[in-house]
Length: 71
Image 1 (tube, rainbow, N blue to C red):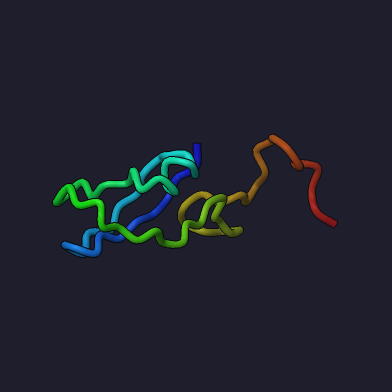
Image 2 (cartoon, rainbow, N blue to C red; image 1 turned 30 degrees about the horizontal axis):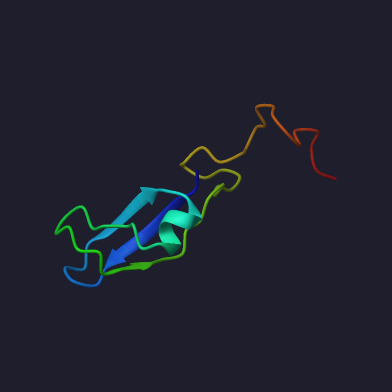
């Protein structure tokens, strides 16, 4: 299930929700702060990470799909 980012148009709270695209399109997202359904979907970024980043990233490998190395 994808993680979507939202911003509440009523109170300005930014939040993330795990939901299907169908649920998002049906307007089921609701602000956890004020319970408003007046939310705007933001841009989510996933699989983010860079070599040497403090967040861990993909530096050093670790196996998994595509772990054969880059040329």
